[in-house]
Length: 337
Image (cartoon, rainbow, N blue to C red; front, side, top):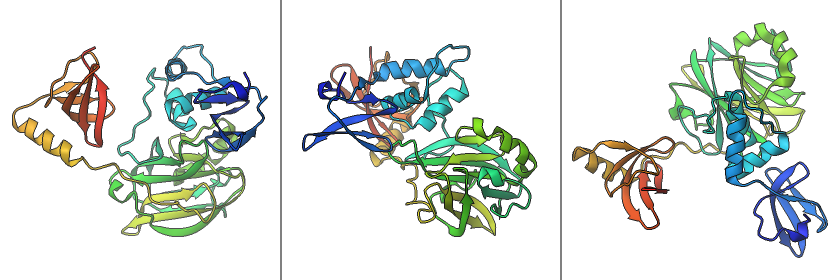
């Protein structure tokens, strides 16, 4: 199929690129997650898979023993159709649980993928993966609060390219959105940044040997691995401290001048409508029902959804649909089917 014949197709595949095509002054332009490409009308393209096909393939890829395969273009296509980054797709496949739900962290941050957790002793190292070794001059060592730290990587509009990576101590999410102090920059020469516990120095040789097989996320349970926008350069590092110990550490993945772009949006507070309806229903002795599209709900019912949490039915709509107020706002879901 050629570009001139794609009227009505929202998402297409062109070579290794997945995106949408629009026309500006008669010229076809394909917009992907990271670039914009000018296309000739005779360029060969194909329609992207449907969202249902993407779900089915991802579920197969994430199921142990499955023979399903997916190259990098296929993974981009799955991500585009399911509105998630390729990084999130890879995390789901790596988990091998048969579920296509994204990896969920203890807190949710807008435009961020949760990547897992690791344990910190008393120091964190921020460096290129080639510099995680004793006395490496290009590494930055930061005194840190011991305990479990959680890792998030920021994407922009579900781009494959990462914006920033941050790690936060499990007891300090309330300051996770505070930029903190800029410590300076680290030198990168292999296209990545790591935020790891200082114990990783003992694994430096192994980390160096295994690096070509890594995906973004937590590696060897010692810390986070993230890809930069350019292979070489200087990348800014920030820290937020409590009593001289770091509790949040950030590293830019897009150069020294963009330490964090802007602070991430914290999880939304419950809406006033949700809070009032929930309190009223609970005071009347209400109990929560697990959401199922087969269950018929009524106004005032409390519903527990595996993804959206607890909500209160505020309206029964036509066509077998119901509106439910969740903590982050109302959503329309099917019921009684």
